[in-house]
Image (cartoon, rainbow over all chains, first blue to last red; front, top):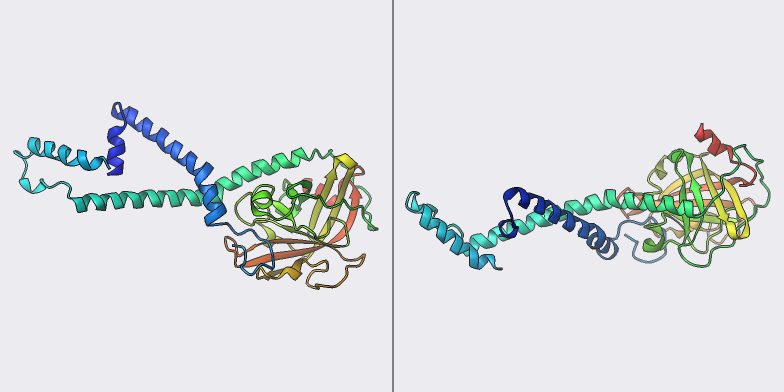
Length: 60
Length: 269
């Protein structure tokens, strides 16, 4: 579904498609590393931060 | 999705071409259920890849970024290279810099020879996760003593991810030096403080008495002999269940203009 669709909409011969696919993947990984993952780490899955505090819920 | 419209037509065209020569049982190429199943499979592959990338990002990329940023922060402090000779060890009342007012100002550096000769990390004010711990690395608990002062200079740091300044905290042994240098060029303040590790403990995160002015003795007034340093980090690694806490006591101090503590020149050799 998704993968064949992407492969079909990419223009050009197979060699060009491979290059386009790699560029596309690089863009996706960049977006994840720059915006998505920092957001996830800050708001959804905060990493352990090593402080002691009095708050009832221990800081994850 | 547009694939819905195009796929059956595409499959049909194929059937017309191939149908005559091949057995007809391959004809229904994709039913609605099959299409949904393959969509689900692809989404699961994407989710798996994204999860793997997230692990890579936390375990590796945050370190790359943080170590780079922390090195730059040490340089921003513009600490003058001290004379290489070993200076006089002073054990009297130490000069103490006033606590920086705002979050996240960098006022000094910490060197721990046990963590490697090139271990030199900035110390920022406060323990805010985003503003200090994730970026500057070591964070000074606001309201606790400043280096050299009576009381407890308490510092938190990540044990994994974001430059992991306290990754090897469990390797510290009693007697190990922890060298703090506080620099404020605006007031010509530049002092070494050499602490020696006394002991470590593992506690749950609510044990705030570990960073009391006299560690583990909340309410007790510190005397001239109680000039402590406390490091707190996660324990076990990758978990938030407990804290690894290491205490150290001030051994001596020295103006940075006079020389370098022997503990640092020993590691350089």
